[in-house]
Length: 230
Image (cartoon, rainbow, N blue to C red):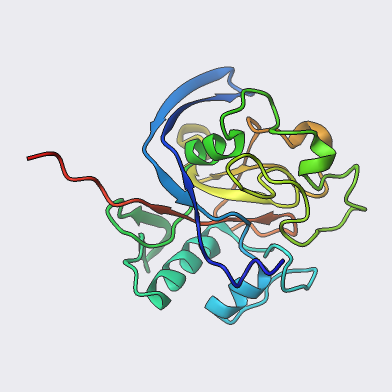
């Protein structure tokens, strides 16, 4: 399977998702319009084609890119958008690298919101996982404690692979500004995580400059707004 030869994104239907945070015991709901999401995490080959860089610890074209920060992911989205003639989704501030504005009207590549991520991960299911964990995810119990090529486990019913396990995925959202400042949300669990962490609802956080060998990302795109009937 060559995940890089097809940049087609999966159409994700609209819906409502309820998110929760175990630390604060808080839950909240989000209504989502339809959007598109990449079927795989961004691979090292794709990342190198767009940026010319190979930052990952374990090298392999079809491995998920890792060792990338949230800021790296945002810059990648803008660079890939520019290469494909799309409007970049993000406005970056040279004087303040942590301040990034999202142009929600842009048609370029972007990070999913965490509500979009969880809605896509669940794919209409209500359980913690969209299938038996060993069949859908690379985690500490079956990964031999190493990263694996994308698409090696079973997808969910939306046709999305590796939503759980293999690498944690950066999302757009700030985790909790009052407590953690600019820390951003990570979702999905990784190849070195125990089974508990590989669930649709699990939230993790890190600084937007943080890089480690079990964190990557996948891209989304917004659908054009439908004009109101005249």
